[in-house]
Length: 112
Image (cartoon, rainbow, N blue to C red):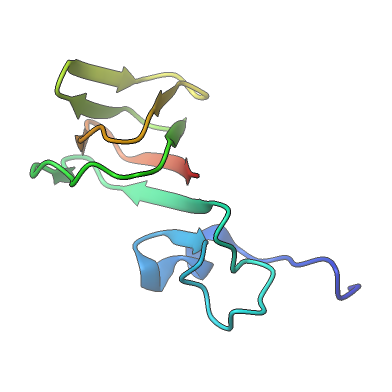
C-alpha cells in the first residue's frame, strides 16, 4: 500500500479512546489520523447505554449520524431520535447534550 494511503478499522482503532479514531489525540503525531482539524468517532452502544449527565458545552460543531439501531440525543431544547439509517443531528458550539441507546446502535460522530 502506498505510504500516502492509510487503512484500518474504526472500531478497533478507537477501542482505547471510547471510539474516537481520528483527531489531535492520536499518537504518533505524524500519523495521518492525527489532526487538529476534526475528530471522528465510531460509537458502538448497547441498548440501554446512556450518558445521563449533561456534557460540558464543547467549542466545536458536532455531527452524529446513525449507522444502525435507535439512538436518542437530548438537548436543552428537546430530544432528537435517530431511528432510520442515515438520520443525523448537527449542533453548534456551546450546546450541551446527553444521550441514550434505545436499541443496539452504531453512531458516527464528527467534530470540527
